[in-house]
Image 1 (cartoon, rainbow, N blue to C red):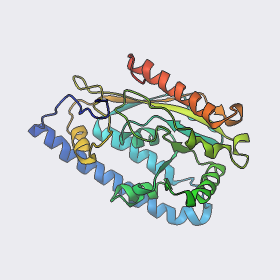
Image 2 (cartoon, rainbow, N blue to C red):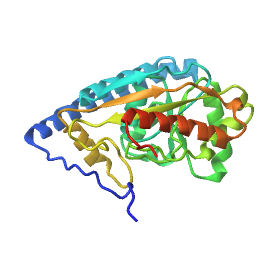
Image 3 (cartoon, helix red, strand yellow):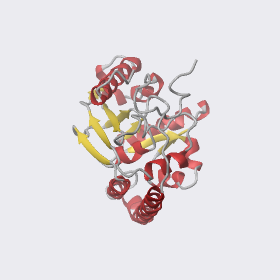
Length: 279
């Protein structure tokens, strides 16, 4: 049985001379901005880390500026609805693309939670480590250490971003949220001090393109998808919708909390796309 995971995006993009010009110019500009920002961030961390420890009062501003600039370079406009919470807690969002990193970083100070393998990826791994990403390994022997890391970061006021679907999608649906990822919020009294803010990230494709244009899922390679996006003359837009935060203590179990966040995110995606998607 063929499902959405097996399907290839229906619209083939022919790369014209203009497309290749855009790819080169945008690619060079993004490289300069991203890695120039990375160099600046690492220099600032040499001062910031010894003085402030886990706290990062300076460098997240660099990350936000870089992500806003990169979205502008790609020509993708973004709009924010609602406000990021100020309370101690975490963010849970749907996951559609590598572009989520830019969209979520552009409008708030957050730190992503990612699989450990990403730390070893060339270039991307360097960026992830420098910007404070929390890496988790699928190893039960490291569970206690990882739990302590979560707690330390959350208690330090860091807003950690979790993608509870466990994988990325085509941007037209929300997969069931995995309750296991919410278990960290119910240990050592965190449930008494934490709030969780559901966030919906919505991509609107460029005119004439498949609604799944920005989606990156399954076995799709990163480089061809990046080239496809950079070569698009008229881009679409992304919306980041911040929903009302909820107290962890208001939910009796991680399953109940996961179900609530999933329903909120899914309902907004369906509303924003004006369709029956997000199922």
